[in-house]
Amino acid sequence: MLRKKLTLRHHSAVLRVAVAFDERAHAADFNTAMAVLIRHERAMMASPSEDGCALYGAAVENLYRLAFGEEAAQAVLAFYGDDVTAMVNAVHPFIRNTVAPAVRKVSLRGRKAAARDFLRARKKALRT
Image (cartoon, rainbow, N blue to C red; front, side, top):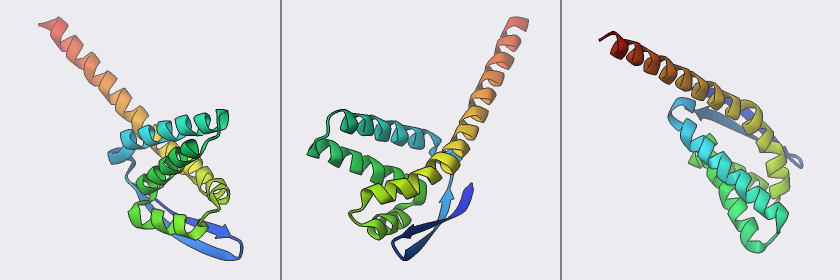
């Protein structure tokens, strides 16, 4: 379980968010949310539109709900209001540098365990 304190500053205000993210339980959801976010971000950059911005905003909200929980995500969104650029610049480094590496570590451990189990089963099958 990833437990961190995130301190966000916007103008003269400060918001402290207690992050408790279960990377084992939410690794697949996190990876999916990040892929969706990146896809919408690229689409928005290639061809800016109102619909593209709305989809990107929804992807950001979904990622924050997953990483911070519903209540903390709403607090972050309310704290920054319409200043999405400031919010993304403040929050995404935390997600990229803290949450994503924890998820990658768990995912790698899971892949290694699956490969090890597969090899054991294969050796056992070859012996019989």
